[in-house]
Length: 72
Image 1 (spheres, rainbow, N blue to C red):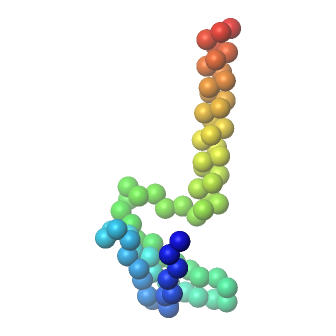
Image 2: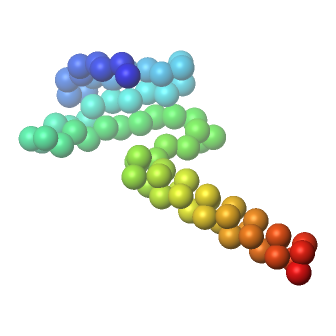
Image 3: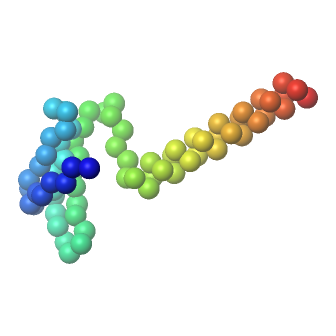
């Protein structure tokens, strides 16, 4: 993991097309602005994990139903 220090209104650039700017700092909370192409999804990590878990569950349920239909 790369750790960088940034102050309010400072930014960093990733892969020439994603810019992350520190918008506000209040106590322990930091507000970030993310500018990225529309085809690049941006999620909070907890939301990303929920999406991944839901996708895994959907595959498992669909796969089980497909096996039941195949053999039953």
